[in-house]
Image 1 (cartoon, rainbow, N blue to C red):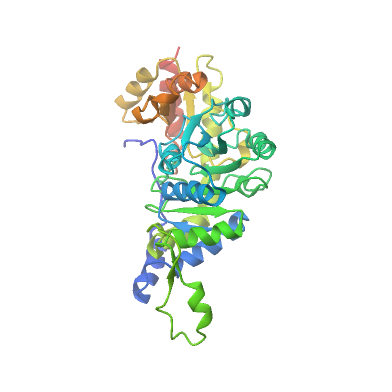
Image 2: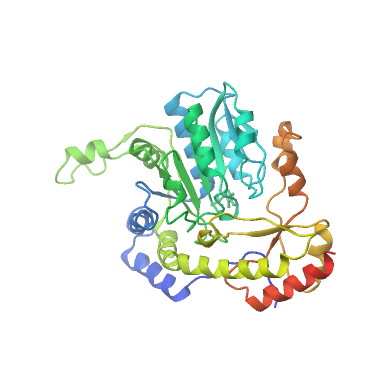
Length: 377
Ligand SMILES: *Cc1c(COP(=O)(O)O)cnc(C)c1O
């Protein structure tokens, strides 16, 4: 059977039972399971605030937009970000009329603190950090830099569901202003599409709850009517979006969350096998992780001299790899950043994502590594 690079595993019967509850109750939208999922996520991660939304993409957009409005950032102000990411990360910056300035990456394919510091100008307002593949990289150094230069820190935690650092969820560290998770179809905690936005600041959390639902503010009137007569009455505070999550997705999320740690442990087992079988090949560079025993390992990459050759040979056996990601400066939209991050550019030409998910067995890893070692000499 063919092996895909990413593939979700759902606990089907349990998911259906949770969804059935929504259907029988006649409540599939905002509220009910979305509230339950937010509470479960807070309990699991230790985040003080969690707001359930329909994707990580819209979460990053709202994160940047709220920080921009509340802090008076001007058009053309800059956010330092990574070129090795899914394009949602950087689009969120442009969406708010700000400039994405790329800094180079380190050996974890996360932002390199030294280059970040070099890219700071008097227009820099924030840093956008991607926990690449679930890795923490040098996040702690980035936090110190942000504190020193009075910059906000946004954590794109699309890959980080379940990642810990000595038992702590990195998004909860003091100095991270907002963390955005993805529960998209192939992420570690798959639903179909959804995400969670976790602000450290309660006020920002209150704003995002309004902004994600057309700017509607129900609190003012809800408080003034004890018997619920004025339930229909509300004010509109912002030109908001329709970005909140729904109960069907939350129903799936609640079930999948129960298995997240177990699933991530399985991913780590496969990674250990990959590393054991590839580490002695001098032509293969394994993209390393720190806190390896607590990493979610959303993806596992190696860098090889000839990527096409390896992908082709594996495809002959119906084993499909991926590339995460092309240097974003190669996209027309970000071409002004071309040439500014040489290490990221070089690596992006050679990285290869090997299959890693709940449907891959240790025997599959042996088969894959055998081919890779035969091809890469
Ligand atoms: C998947 C992904 C996103 C977008 O997540 P969605 O929930 O699909 O919007 C953003 N950033 C990174 C790094 C991703 O991998």
